[in-house]
Length: 151
Image (cartoon, rainbow, N blue to C red; front, top):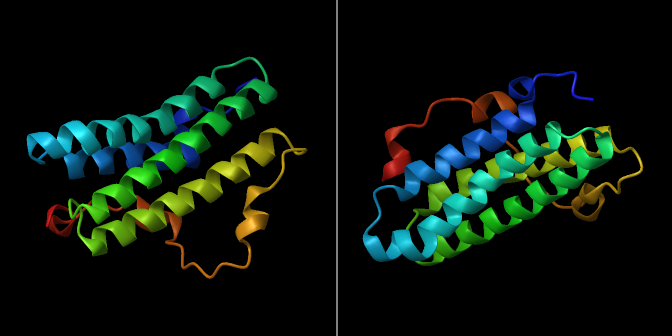
């Protein structure tokens, strides 16, 4: 089934980056923050790429799409942990906004990938089509992080 190498998929690359971004932000937190928010956030963010890769290795497009839906669930959970980290002042607002845009871009890429696997899948973006959100170009998501990420 899988004719494209997993590592060539932009959606997988974005998901891998999301996990690394979350790790970089949480690795220096104090114990309580790491154990309550950090560990859960890392697990959720890492599960996005893990589910994409598991689905990619399955024998059918339908199975692949099913695991991509799991990845969407993990992405939503990742966004919830970002909200909690921001509310608890563990992440500064500018970093939270940047991550939120990256997560939104990843969500749209993932939904597009699901539709490419299963054209009968509902396009979840229809529900937010009217929302005015400025998304980062994909190329900007691959730029190395700056020192501002850790401030």
